[in-house]
Length: 318
Image (cartoon, rainbow, N blue to C red; front, side, top):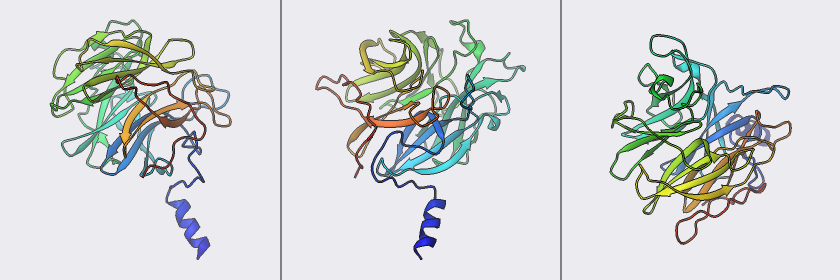
């Protein structure tokens, strides 16, 4: 009986470590965390690094989903979306974020565009949709939401990456993204069309990977930065989702064994959490990254305290 129970438990994809520990996923290399709380569960949408230990560039074939109800034990749903889902796409599965609205889940992704009548290539942003947080997901509109030709402030072809979507209290949705500069645009209620022009700005030390949210009366723009090399995490605040943004400083120093890092911030069961990735697993590195989570703490004035990167991770959430 015990052996049968153990086999069923392992097959379920649920991990039961003896205590919380970072990185939180250890059997595959994961990157670019994007948490979403739906009902009583935290869902984690991730990239997937598959480069070998000798490769010197990213190899990211798909996006994965995990979930937890206590921040310690994680259920693995496996590969749930890939660039091959989008007929217009080619290349790797870069940073993405899933949001819930109007009874549906919209997964905003970044990859590259094939050369065709709609684009001559370069990075692009698409959106997939599902009725469930774990899918199945399908291309919501059959074309890219943003193509390289729409944003020409930077000369490189990979500036349209790392989308994050924020829905304000008045139900207006905003999308932010960009490498080298940060861009934002309003989205229509259907979440699959732009509702205005694209605005470009450059926060201090900004590189990529924005994450936008609101806490009390402050809006937060958190991003991977060039404060030093490798990347760190810095942030700005504003009293409007469109700015102007006030630079607030560094909240996360360099991470172990990875040139990049990437923020994902969420409140869950009364605590605030900061997701990121590093290269700390055995054989890990800048192209073989792993997701971690630590506590996010605020000062009385709303500014963010420095992130304490730990190997122990967080305590079980109740």
